[in-house]
Image (cartoon, rainbow, N blue to C red; front, side, top):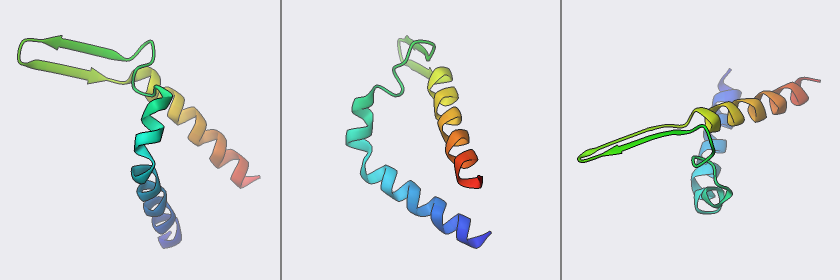
Length: 66
């Protein structure tokens, strides 16, 4: 369990360092992501992005377990 936590922490650090390049991929601005902007209020709910990230992570985990 501790090994997985260390790996998850390293992955998060790497993603944080690569964020300027990852943001150019368009994640967070996909069709289906909900954005509501009004005076003094901004609501953002990335439905499509969350589903896409979940599918990719599940595929990676499935491949690692094989």
